[in-house]
Image (tube, rainbow, N blue to C red; front, side, top):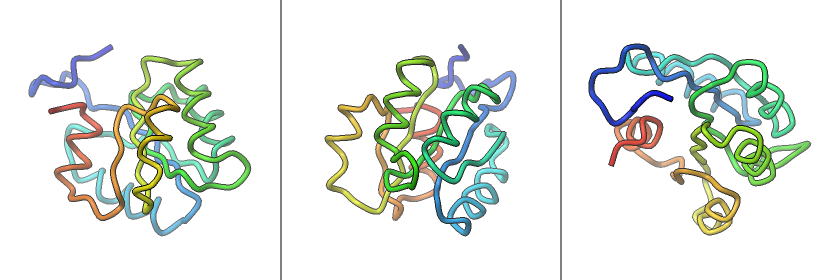
Length: 128
């Protein structure tokens, strides 16, 4: 696994975006594509799809919403962390009340959708 705390990345951090709202996914893809340290490798519309795409794409980081159909982000986080504990999971949601539940599910970072680009980048790269 790469050391994402270093400023000298040999290759971009591979990120998978999961949100049931298309405009949110597209916005995150467009935004993250502007950052040279990050490569968006895929998108998912629901929790079940994100788990399948983690198996397919082997991302370094998954950025996901909590409220998604088929399987919610909490359940998807549990599956990801059980199967691929090295994958960093960043929860990005509108609801502050999910913070403790996302920690219990194994998420590595929690952000509200009102976060800044710098906060999102820091959460993805695992910087403190």
